[in-house]
Length: 177
Figure (tube, rainbow, N blue to C red):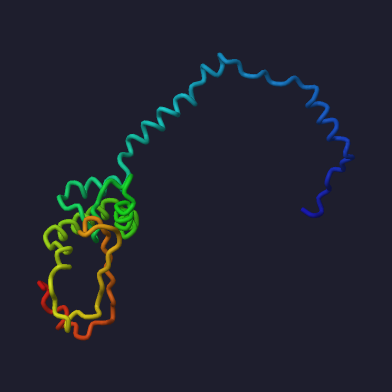
């Protein structure tokens, strides 16, 4: 291909082409009547709206609905509320979606199981119980953030210190405790 002869150009072709283009009549601009008869733009707007409506509620909205229906509105000390206006709830729901790689059905299953367990176990009541210091000392801490005398006005944080277990059978042997 390197041996192929290339046509010689003089550089005069460009002005000739430009002059020919300038001499050609311009295409007529569309008239308002022509744009009214073409409905692709108008038809696309309702179709997109219909498609959006067919998609349904967002993943976070679906998790919020499940939480509302569960009868137990609390996770990790966060009283779940409308995620559109309550950022802590939005974060909780997003964590369930992230843990399940965005799979809404898996996230709903996991969240449902969590809410059921928390409803039965009432883990926030554990903060008022007394446990063996020898068994659990140094394994975790509970802190709160916010205002108010009760837990209702505060966020609860737990800090687990993994690796601090002295005896697995002594610490975790009685799962009912």
